[in-house]
Image (cartoon, rainbow, N blue to C red; front, side):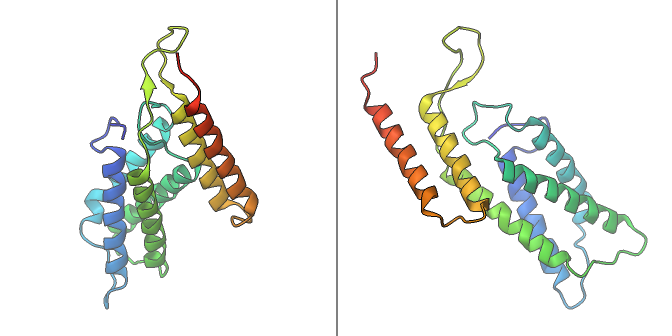
Length: 187
């Protein structure tokens, strides 16, 4: 993952957000609901890192995983939730909204999905210079196939009809195209 300017890598940030969200959900579902003490010290730095992640997304093609649009939307939702938690924790009389446990669990579930996607993603090979020698990072063809596959899977999962056989056909055609490309004689 990309090391950003903040104290966390993307992967560490997702893990810490997930841990905090689960901790908040547990505390909110307790007999006497209250925010955990760690919220006041950890929510704001994590929210600030969310801004850095959104600003840096897509700039690092040399990483082995790229933030997808749906993931970036989740980052924005997490940021808003963390800011809300910070406001609640810093208020004179903190009171938890009724749906806070549900919201925390939904965001935590998405973070776990993203973590699984990170673990299952294949490294994308890059070359330091392109064919024109201009020095820009360029993803190789197999990396582009993998990026397209991931993007299509994301679009499929968020489409109106994710079980439409056309989605499977598109993914199969992409696999065939990648296999045929790899079978071409290389110089």
